Image 1 (cartoon, rainbow, N blue to C red):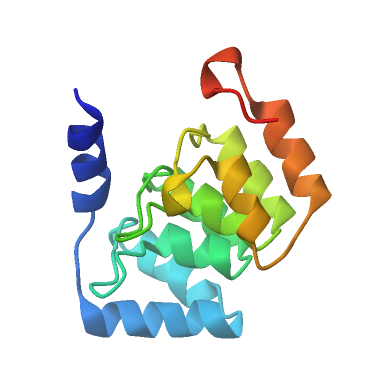
Image 2: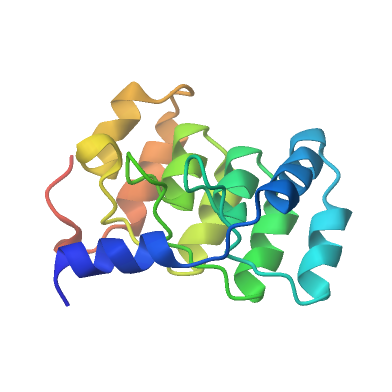
Length: 153
C-alpha cells in the first residue's frame, strides 16, 4: 500500500453527521464525558468525523484532554492514526501539541504511530510550533521511538 493510499484510508474512516458531531463535541468541550460514553455504548461510530476539519471523536477527546473518553474510543475501535484533513494531525499529534500527557500515554500504549507528519514535518519537529511547549512530551515521544521512526533529535 502506498503512502497516498494509507492517507486516503485514514481520512475516509468514519461517518459524518454534523448535528450529532456538534452535540458530542459540545459535551467534550464542557467536560461532560458520560453522554459520549453512552453514545459509544449504544453502538455509536467511534470514528465519527467533523465534516469541516475531518476531526474524529478521538481527535476531539485528545484535544480536550478527556482521557477516559480516549480510552473508551480506543476500546470501541477508534482509529488511533486517523488524520485530520488539511494538516495531517493525528490524535497523538493533538495530544502532544496540547501537552496532554495522560492522553498521549494512552494513545502510545494503543499503538499510535509516531510517523505522522503534522504541518508537513515530523511530529517532534512540529512540536516547535506547539501551543503548549512541553519538554516532558518531547521526552515521552523520544522514549517511544524505534530505530525505524526516523532521525529526529
